[in-house]
Structure formats: C-alpha cells, structure tokens
Image (cartoon, rainbow, N blue to C red; front, side, top):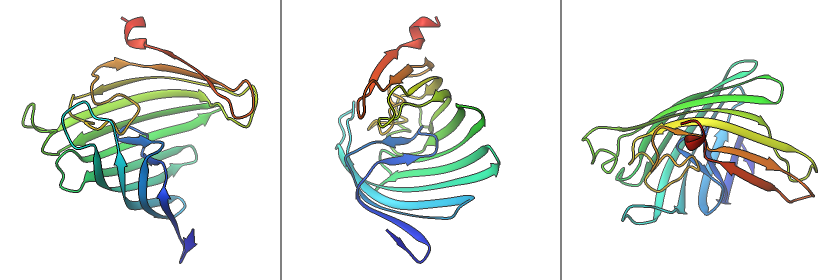
Length: 204
C-alpha cells in the first residue's frame, strides 16, 4: 500500500535486512514496515515472529528494525541495518554491508555486524561480532524452467550473535564456516531442486 510517497507493508511478510547477515526470514513474521526513497531507501518497522532457538529463551518475540540501502555508484550499494528485540535482551544488532553487481549474472556481497545485547555479552562481556562474504551466480526463478543459481560464501560469527537464528547463514552456532555452497535448479514451473555442500569440510 502507498500513501504520501511511502510504501506500507502490513501483515505476514518476509524480513530481509542488509545482505542477510542479521535477518533473512522468509515467513512467520507479522508486523508493519514503512519504506521510502529511491537512490537512498529507508525502511523502519516492527514485527513479531516465532523463531527457532538453540538456547533456553522465549521463542516468540517483538522486534524493531531499520534499514538504509544507498546507491553509491551504478553497480554498488551500501546498507546500514539495525535489529532490536523489545528489551534489547537477545538482539541489539547493527550491521553494514556492500554488494556489487557489475559482472553479468554475478553478485558479490559482504557484511559486518555487532550484537550488543545482554545475552550477546554473556560469554566474554563484550559485543558478539560476525562477518560474511558471498559470491552468487544468477538465481533460480520458480516461473522460469531451466533457471539455475549457485553461491559460495565464508562467514565468521561469535556463538551468541544470532540466538534465535533469524538468518539462514547459521551465524548463531558456527564460526569460521566456509560455505555452505548452495545450488538451485527449476525443472518445472513452481518447482525448485536444491542441493547443498558443506564447504567447511571440502576446503580443509
């Protein structure tokens, strides 16, 4: 929905912040996001989600988010992102990242983040930090038979950086993880075949 030059998204929706280091949730998110801008797009909002967790914390939580996506040059975008739960107990996370799309069918991205929440500080009394780098080729599209996508990446995350696993990059439990490598192929309309490789073991 649009009004006074802003876009409003209300109800169940995916949440994607920056390059995906701190949040790339596909479903189970109910809330409101408001965004505006073109070369500099600003998004703010709040949502509630039921997320998996590997520690003994309440799974259903309220979150506040903000995201700035700025076009620095023709093929270079910069993001600054923010994620916080209601009390800053599990998440009080900021990140900054870049992506480059100047090579045909290739996207190169990277992101660095810090979580300054109460839980994140428990292991060492300091911020939990994480970073990732990723190279992606094309992308599988469910409405295009024969489309193909693949990516390989590297990430390093402190254990309490992403307690409720709001990102699919496994940045809660894994450190110095090479990969995974992911390949997607569309054999028929609305069907996707996916294979996965653990590059941490392959590259040892």
